[in-house]
Image 1 (cartoon, one colour):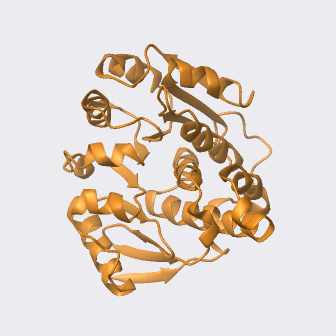
Image 2 (cartoon, rainbow, N blue to C red):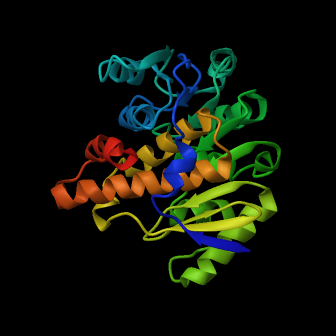
Length: 283
């Protein structure tokens, strides 16, 4: 198992100079699926972090109340309302149609954990023709019910420790770093997937290799900083960066932006502050 530590040099490979001839959509169109009657913030943070990381266009699909709130955040976002208060199986056909032409997706933020919502997520992951995607938050709980989907799709999972326990049955809180690395690598190998295990040191693994990211801050416990990570993952995937590289790049960018924001705001840090520091990290 090859293990490397991440640093700013990764950005050179992710963001080569752009040609003068490029046009809109050359750097991707990301679909964010999330939100519910109760939660509208998560998909907004996904989308705004994604735009700041270079994807050309983001469309957010969410239940109607959440979609209307999302539309008010920024004119840079396309917000697509789905009838009802929660994502349900009845939305599958509409979401599959909306997926046409998109280059990556992010799913899971703020969707809640009803059986109907889980059924939609699993059906979407089985049937969507978008080649790559990021599975986060409540969607991780859904995919734990049918992990074999991971073997058939090119996905990046972004769990924290409890979500990794839901996925794998492995409680890693008291494990050493080396033990955590081995468990994450074993899971990535078994299911042929890519994982970013969020923590004091992020562990990024696919079936061949592991990378570690020490950039971040204890002030990033605030709600929403995982949503920004998922949005950055989706942005890089939409720009046709390979899953392992996208996972590594997102972990570094999110952690470093959070580190810079925390230096200024400390316990007052919010996820929106982190997003505002992404351009400084990329520069």
